[in-house]
Image (cartoon, rainbow, N blue to C red; front, side, top):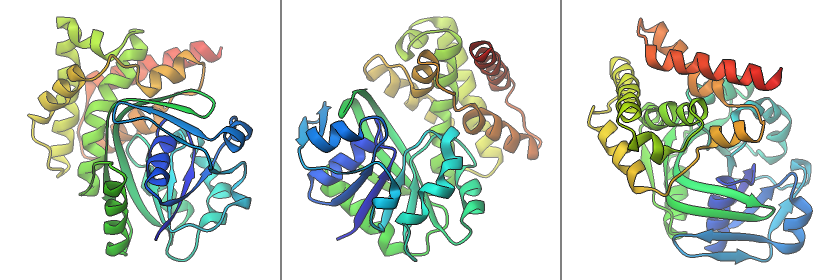
Length: 304
């Protein structure tokens, strides 16, 4: 049996880690503000797929106190990735797989520079989930996760991870790394930024004809860029993502929540980095470049 570690027990890390623990896997959770609460009261997951409570949680306030793990999920906001240089080493043995369940482009390349020998994979979560109060996760809809292999040489470990997820009733699949990252960007780049720039929700953006059209145009910019870089994403994927969003519960993405609560927004990996990668290939995404500039303005105003 694999031993799992979770760095960042929030809406995403808390959900997937709790699902694995609930199915009988050994999972160790790093917590910050609600460490004392979870240590005493456990984790509550209210889920559209069936709610449950973990009364006995392997909770820690420091990775120095955690055991080495076979698989570590990094679920921090990417603005905190500089902390990994200190947080990760206590959890690593020679063959540990680290899965970055984070949004954006270029994450694995930058973490690999920090840890050249590290086995890395991307985790792309398609889920509506929020941590509403200490030790309490509200899973509203969806919940599947795609795993893209970046530098892991142990194919059986990757397969075991998928089997463990499925045993925990999480729909998980192995997908090609670049496809995984850019497919998630098709949704993230339009909806995260537009909900901030227009102070709204995903459903309202799609109800209005003007913003519906703009969202789809932004999605097609991402898909076209990915295609030109050799990534296999059909143009019809935009329609699929729009339909999925129409079907989901009205939702404020993570960047909107970060902005509303005056937390740093993940502008770099969600916008700046993919736009840089596009320009390296002689490509441009003008509508998303404008959105990036608007987000940078809003963040500067909030920090003034």
